Length: 364
Image (cartoon, rainbow, N blue to C red; front, top):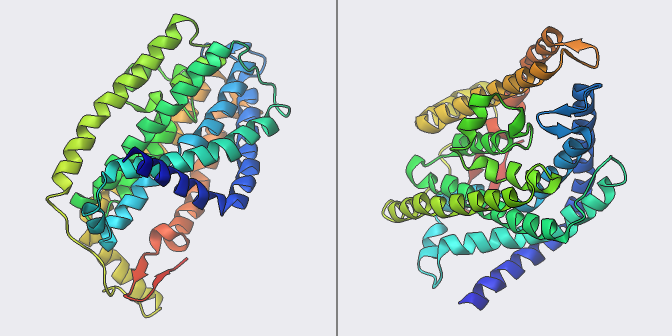
């Protein structure tokens, strides 16, 4: 059976290899993200040598390593599982002689290995000479970091699978998936390191698994967690991995008793008239009210955390590039008006997929 799971890893790796050009372009996109955060944090630091227990060089290294690590542990297992539940193909998985959850983990591992070898590694080679970084010289630190990176993948995949399995109970878990993605990116320390959070917020994060995904490995790599502390944070990752097995098992056990199939000819094939479309769309959204309110909550969480990020930053500096707090907040609020209209009418989130027995058509 182990060889069969290894074949699943290999097949997913080869599938990703067929679209490798997308990931080469992704290296450029991630490099631009790292550059944007580098100049932002450089402006935040100003003339200060130390903020949040990290120097400018440590912060630059942390940002670069965190984004490249994200390329490895990131996957869309939650969306894949939700789609398989909706179209009913998950029923076929039940009669196959393997464990569905392990198969998904192996598929995610195959994708992660591809990203690590052809995205993260060359990405670090590209980024290192562009920005001031300080990599560890001790091979032992590299070994611990790579082990922690693997556990980051495991924990993130567990959270994704748990989110995807909620489609058995919510029928449409789009809002939950959006909220999960926002929570992982922000609470994991990808956007703001945990050491920059207020004391009460940093203590609260210790009761959540998200920092174990990004912040803890980044702390080891930058030297913020050195010596015996590196083993302590690795132990925290292992504990979270073991704890997440419990809700994963319980959800999977309960989901198997709730299997039903959504699919066939769509009941929402729109004529193309914008008024009729909006009416049908609102009816559809209200049909899945729990998911609708999840999306509302995820949007509020996203904007609230953006504002929280700004408040945290301005606790450490009076201005960013001659822009004070009130000016930045005004620009953010002004930006949200056209952004809200764009999200409502022009993105895939507002335009549902329509499935027939012969084809799948997605409006953009």
